[in-house]
Structures are given as C-alpha cells and as structure tokens.
Image (cartoon, rainbow, N blue to C red):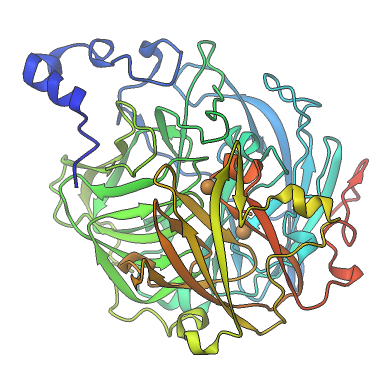
Amino acid sequence: MPSPSLSRRDLLKVSVLGTAALALPWQGVLSGKSASRIASSKLPRPYSVPFAVPPVLAPVRSDATTDYYQLTQKAFVGELLPGVRTPLWGYNGLVPGPTIRARAGRQTVMRQINALPATHPTLGYVPWTSTHLHGMPSKPQYDGYAGDNSMPGQWKDYVYPNSCSARTLWYHDHGVHHTAENVYMGLAAQYQLTDAIEESLPIPHGRYDVPLIIGDVAFAADGSLLWDDNTHSGSYGDVILVNGRPWPTMAVEQRRYRFRVLNASIARGYRLALSNGQPFHVIATDGGFMAQPQQVTELIVGMAERYEIVVDFTALPVGQSIQLVNRGVKNAVDYDHTGKVLQFRASGPATDTSGNSVPAVLTTPHEAMTLTPAMARATKKMRLKRDADIWTINGETWSDVERSDYERVFSHPDVGDVELWEIENSSGGWFHPLHVHLVDFQVLTRNGRPARAQERGPKDVVYIGEGETVRILMRFGPEHGRYMIHCHNLSHEDHDMMTQFQVGVHDADCDPRLAAPPAYGTPPAL
Ligand code: C2O
Ligand code: CU
Ligand code: CU
C-alpha cells in the first residue's frame, strides 16, 4: 500500500527544502492544495487545539419506564476554527449535538423541534428535517423516514425502544434531498446505549470511554462552511474535525482507552492507524460487541460506520505523543492535512486502573452472527450504479418509490425471515457505504472471501469498495413496516441512491408518514 498521507508534494517539499521546511512558519508550508478559501493563517496548526467531547444531555424528565429529552434544531454562530465565526445548525445549538446515554429496557422519547430558518443561508432551500436514530430498531414512524418531514416551525416526538444490545448509535438528520447539507451544517450526534453486559465488562468506562466523531469540512473566505459536492459525487473538506475541533490533541493517561469511532463525514472514508504502527483492538461494530475482539493495525471506516476500539497508551512516555492518522481510501479527495486526525499526548500515569483490559471473549455472538446462508428464505441482488447524474440501486431511485406512493419495495420479507443480499459495485470510480435500516446484519463474504477482521461483528453499514461484491445476511424484525436502504455517501443518498424494504404487513399504524405526523405550534410540556 502506498502511503497517501505523505503525498508526492510532501516528499518533494521534504527533499527540496530539507529540514528548512519544518522551520518555516505555518503559512509558509501550507500549500495551495486545499478546498477552503479562507486565509490559511486562519487555520490552526494541526494538533494545536485541545480535544473536547460533546456534553451528555440530561433528560427533561424521567418516569418509571421512560426518559424524555428535548432537542431544538437551530441556527447559531459557532467557532470551529479558533477566532473564526461560522454559521452552523445544531441540536440545541451544539456541533456535534449533545450525546444521549440510554439504557436497554428503558424507553427514550426525544422531542425534536425544527427551529431552523425558513431557508438555508447560502443554498436557499427550505430545511425540512426528519430525525433518524441510526442503529435503533425503531418503529417506522419514528425512524426518520424520507417523506416524514418536519418543516421549520414543526415539532415531533420520536419514541425509541432501546430494545437492542448495547452499542454506539448516532442521531442525524434525514430530510429527503437535503440530508447531506443538513448534516454538513452540524445536525449529527452520538447516542450510546448501555446494558448489563456492557456495564459488567472490564473494558474502559467512564472518562476512559470517549466518543470520536470524525468529519471533514471546508471554509469559505468569510468563515462560513463551503458546500461543494462535485455534482453529487461527494463533498471533501480539507479540515478534519474530531468532535467539532480541528485536528485536536488529547491528553491521555498511561493506560487503555476505549474510543467510540463514528465517521460522520458526508463522503470521506478513512483508513485509520496509529502513527507508530501500534496495533489496537476492535471490540464493537455498528450493532454492538463482537464475540471476540480483533487486533488490527488499520481500521477502514466508511461513512456512518461505528467501531469501538481500545488503544493502549501504557507504554507512551509522559510528554510524548502519537497520532491517529488517516492513510486515506481510494476515491476520497486528499488534501495536505486530511492525513491527520487526532494527537494523543501522555500526561502521566493512570489515576484509575479499573476497566483497563480487553477480555478475550466479550459476549456471546450477536444473533446476526449466528445466521448461516442455509437459513436464507431468499437471495437478492443489488447493483449500485451511477446512471448519468443519478445514483441508482438496481436502476431505481427514491423518486421511483415516491412515484409509487411509497408502495415500491426492494424486498418484502415477513417478520423473522432471513435473507441474503449480494451487493455489487462494479465501478472503479467510487465506493458506497450501504446502510440497511432496522436490522443488524452479518458480513458474510467480501469478494468471495471472508469478511475483514474488523467486520466480524454485527453491522448496519457495509463498505462496498470499488469493484467489490459483498454478501450480507440478516433476519428481519422485530418491527414491521417500511424501512429505507441507502448509500451513506449523503450526496448519493440525496440524489437518489435510496430504496426501501417492507417487513410483514404495512398497516395504518406503521405508516411512517401518517402514524405520528409532526405538528405546528407550541408543544405541550414533556
Ligand atoms: Cu444514518 Cu438512513 O441513515
Ligand atoms: Cu439507520
Ligand atoms: Cu454511494
């Protein structure tokens, strides 16, 4: 593998200028290869900004069964770059939004109030929103269905059953045709579900259990976010954000940490590694814990994928640093500093050594991982393809679903049925992280070979690379009704690489547009 983090330009720079380049002021080494139009002096030197995590949101109220949260989607002026004012949209005026921590067995009610302006400040569209809790088997009317839109001034209560195993989820906007811009403006956040198994594992918890929400953005000259999705191919920023901070540095104690990695980028895939080549463990995938942790030296993370990893800083000398770097994936546009993500600096010995291990067995295998092809009631083929300017699934788009009055489905299993889907991307020009709502699936094979080590856990997004064919296996349920399937390159999703499947009957109770419609006006107290 070549190392895209050191580009040909960088090599030239090093060889021509030698060590002198390192002594130049920051502006002197920042090249023209950037997406941002803002003066380069406004960008911080990578690893100069302190790391931070989003706040955990407290419920407005709790009763015997349910925790109630209120979130307002609103415009505000934030500071992603030190000293630069950037208009953003955030849940409760935060980018990323506040983390929600939920416990299996208790229900969450999340009120979402769309208080966004009537139109996007530069793009001019009307910001209708639809909130999706990605990773939760929610009922269709609470799943952020494209067609269940809240207009500015509307609100809706979403009910989440927390009926699945512990995992890292995220909530993000899913407004049809503008998901990419809405998420880019900041409408994304983590949701962490815990259960008795998660709590009892001797893995890092508490302050050693840290969200890493990774994204990329570009800035216009005036400090606003610059939007260019290259005719719906994808938007690639030159500034990497971790939890909303550009290339931050995190102080770590000499012990193990657990990181909940979420790729919240619109179009950028990452190949993450530690700068010293040190291996680390993957302990959980999208749908929760793997049965056995997998040791890796690289982690490929497509958009919307979540991986929980454990990194050991025990041997990192106090005052020394290592970096989490991005070695790049094919067909993501790299800029001078998109190979950098986050720096860790050892601050001192561990102040608490509890939960400082990675057990050889984490849990019994998730049900999806026990499925076998022989159990499949049907095998379906799915071709991901660009037709002219439109992204399609088997030649169809979400417009075809809309034209059918939302009747058209890619597949129609009953509750409890198992299906095998073979997903093919014959292009060499792009990759597609394919997401199936409602279910957790097993990655059965990748190009006829076993899944990657990092994929040996339950998934809900799978990276379909250039020229690849991937087979997945899943059981449908527990809910019935209609759910979306789409590429999580959000520009592809919006234009219009999305379809749906139906589980069992589609009755009035599970019509995502009619069963729990959003309302105008002042909501009653929660
Ligand atoms: Cu994370 Cu349908 O999306
Ligand atoms: Cu989802
Ligand atoms: Cu795609």
